[in-house]
Image (tube, rainbow, N blue to C red; front, side):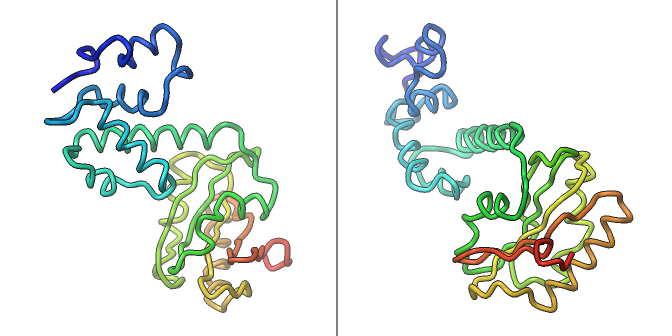
Length: 219
C-alpha cells in the first residue's frame, strides 16, 4: 500500500501543499491528503480520483453510504471525509451571509423545492440576521407531532441564535398554506416568545416559487 510519502515527487500532494499552498492543489490531491494512504490494490491518488467523481456527480446529497460504495474505502476513511466536508460547510455558512427576506431563504433551500416528501427546515440567525445554521427538523407530512417546538428551538438555544425562520416544501406545488401549516406556525411563534427567540417567517417552497407568511401579513 502506497502512502503519500512513497509516491514520486510529481505525485506528492503534501509536499506540493507545503511549497505552494492549498490553492495550488487539485481536488483529488486535497482528498489524498485527507486520506493519507490508499487501500489494497489501489494507491491513494487513484482512490482520491474515484472519490472526486462522486463529489462532481452529487455533492449536495453526499453521505457516508455513497462513499462506502467505493471499493476498498472503509468506514474510517469515509467518516474522515464526511466530517471534513460537514465542518467546512458549517464554517462557510457562518461567513457573514445575511438573510434579508424570503427570497434569500428560497435561494438557500431551493434544493428542497422538488423533493417528493415534505421537508421541514429551520434557519437560525444571529442578532444581525446572519445565517448561523440550517437544520432539517422532520421529513414527512407536516403536523404538530413531527414539528415539536423542542426540536425546532434546541439548536437556537445551543448556538445562542437570536431568531429563526422555518420553511417547508409542498410536493404538490400548491403554495397556499394548509390549516396544519398555520397551526404549527402559531405554536412555534408562541414558543419563540416564551424563549426570547423570535420566529421571523414561515416560508413554503414550491417548484415555481415561494410563499412567505410574513410578506402576506400572516405572521
